Length: 479
Image (cartoon, rainbow, N blue to C red; front, top):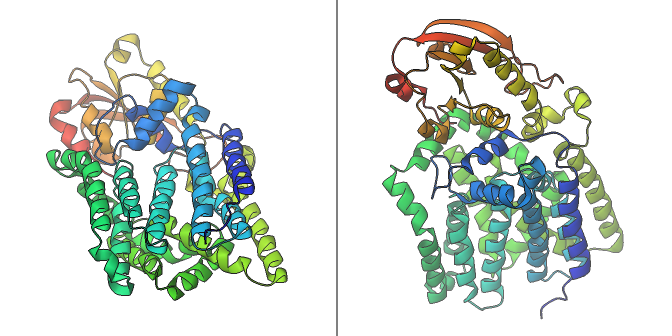
């Protein structure tokens, strides 16, 4: 029998999640990825070397609908987080959870650090999380209700998810392995499941065509990321599994794993988590690739907690409140920016760390450009080391800005008559391509937060030793 739907508390939680995220959106500033998506929004395409088109195009839609502001870019992430809240509650309901379990699942998912970051910032994970959760919900419905047509819905969501990230393949592999290892294996023979696979493949086909016709750039990108951060990600994987949504959510998710494991109908979903974790570790992927499965396990755990004795339920709520408070401080811009450097937040939360200081960065680079004599300024270009720096300068109104980072390399090279270059975060190898270089400024974000741009020198270089068209391949890098 289907449990009653706790629509009132779940709706209130979803609305509050989106509302708080938007209310706090201007408090720090753009994250580097948002500055990049803002640039990509001006170059619509079926795909980019480092990602599919969905997040940049949602950024473009937000800019067109709501204006060119940081809050505008964050409208869709806030709405996506609200959707996560509803979907996690529905997963709990699908697993037999009553109104209490659904409400607990909604509140715990809404206040986890990862959800709050995804709600507050335009990131690819902002949309991956609801897409993974929806796919898991539909798979559960296919398995629990013995209504295999739900595999078609799961396939549709999986196909759509490929336009955001191709990582949804990890979930597919995890669920397939779960069905093979733990069953029910008869699902693998269902024409509905294979129909869902065809739906997913058909929807994902334009993505695959883009990759095939552009030399599979995502494979190059994945290899670069693994080489660059793979070892670090492996070391951080287990600790971050315990803290991604807060330790209390992780404990409840462990209970959820046990609950799913004991139910033969959905044991495959439990198995999907370790399979996905192992695949992530082997490939050197990011620790958050398992986030969608963690919230599903948490929803299952809420069903178990809701059936415990009243005292244990009250204790669970108390712990969730503490978890929520700690996650909010870490994930949201609640600490005044001037005091941020004196807290552990920048060391833990990369999004907070990389969301401060961009106006001062742009002012430092722009100051060097404006100080040039008019004849040199007319022949000058700016070359940055990463897409955040490029995006910050673009947002500040600077023109003739270039970068070899990821997709931005395709928007070069600078014109060969550009004999003056302002370089930032480019390295000594880049400076060797000029007749002379001198340091003209030093970036200071003004709040002493140790992010990637803090303390960077700004170089003024003249007289390229070779034309830009000849050296531009040397500037290309993925990270």
